[in-house]
Image (cartoon, rainbow, N blue to C red; front, side):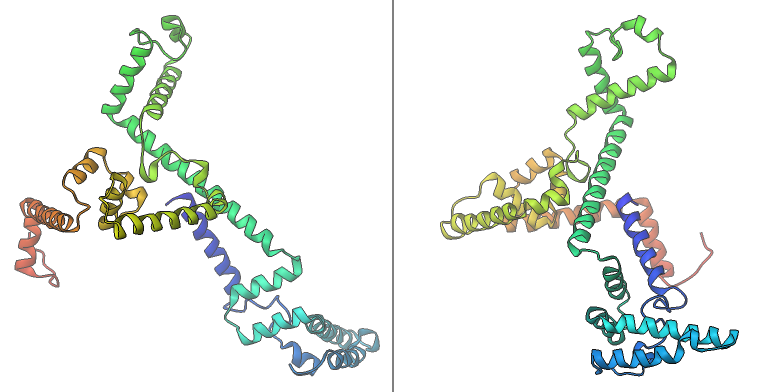
Length: 342
């Protein structure tokens, strides 16, 4: 699981916990808790601000702690006074009252209540929330892409084919002497321990692979233009370019019936294969050239090629011993039977 996926997962879990704490009593700390603010003040949702204020003043005089004697009575009056004061704070403000009415009408909209409540409390600007969210997503995108690229480089470093090729290039650049990056030949290597020599050696190989390996697709080297912030900034240009491309396609190939160029041929092949641009770019160049030689941008050619590929796959599976054993098992026992037979 990638870092982005883990972060999103933990965010959802934390929001879920916040929204459903205490067996669904997630609003105990919001507004009037489990009490109804209107009932506490003895008013209705149709009451005016003046009526709410009048009712509050009357109840405040009645339950003011200073007007009661005895520890128990004083404590009970103080609790009632706090609930009344809280209810009045909620209902006296028009924005707060609207948010509370929305809660009464939509009790299951957990996240909306959470956002509305703390937006007022903290005076959070929605624009700031959007900016921070986009920035976090952009950062996660960039870090995740670097992790994928690093994984690809380490994979190629582990393959003897690429590792040996990199060693040949290193030896050629050092005049055939096989010297390290320190450039001091034998004298330079004596100063390094075996672990340090191995590390320096791997760094040389990695540098050669990075400079000469053209990695395409999802594991390509990340670029700053790929992050969400830059994509949003370039959105008008991207939309305009797409509209120009679509208009050009209709004009040249639909109306004028001109022959497809290489770019258009590759686009049609990718669309028939239902691959994204990143997925299609990951295909080996030799395979792509074979697609072009077979003229797969022509729908009839592609359909015939697809049938051939499916038949070839079926043939390979039929010749596979494990698949043959599976077919025998399904024929003799069926999918729903339990057996201890070998």
